Image (cartoon, rainbow, N blue to C red; front, side):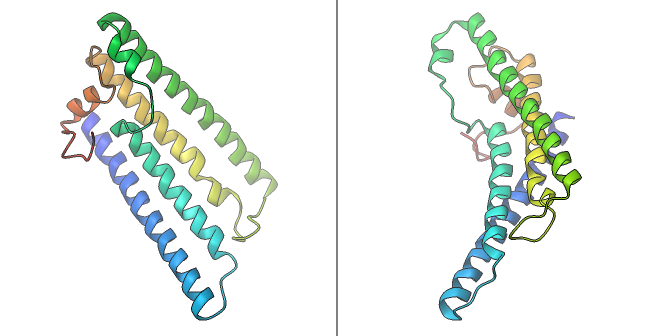
Length: 180
């Protein structure tokens, strides 16, 4: 179950990271060519490029939770004996999950607000909800990723590296998955 869910999430994250990054890159190159070769441009393209790149990087950030690439101070955890380290690891993951759930609640509230007032994006000309919907979607992904890490850590609480129990549960090796 854990492995299947991870594969689905990885597939979604990978498709969105690659598609949005390529879309942003293509749009940026197109804008440069149009501007410097043909002396014209598409007025909404810059906002589209920024939106695509933000989407791609937010999905990449959700993947970074799985891989353990988010910055944190591990020196304290390494210096602590087993018992306090277990408490610290759970505390860190629970606080991270709580923060992501808080942001999820707020982003859903704001998305509903924006949909209610029918705000339009000034440059893209689409409802503002469409470029913004990535915030609640990625906060849900972040929350799910942290919940999966907590479940895996419950099964192997003495692990020094927070993501190691999760990677062991899904059968991923650090090198094969591009991790640490």
